[in-house]
Image (cartoon, rainbow, N blue to C red):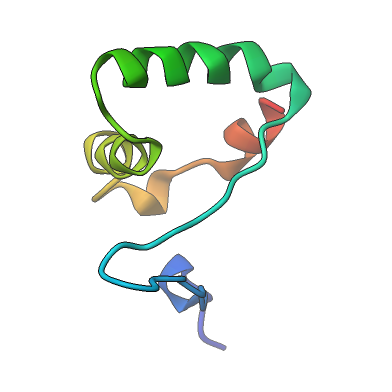
Length: 76
């Protein structure tokens, strides 16, 4: 039996023009950190999407097989 890989996941990306558009939900426990992040990004004229992709490239790209989803999910 073949092992399932994260690249096997089908995702829908809404891109009405050239940019992908998404919405997000922030848990109440993460609200203060979310506001601090938004303030930091606004100060630097950087969008959430730009930051999200940058953070992935810096922190996770190339290490996807070592990513521990339980840490993220447990942080809720």
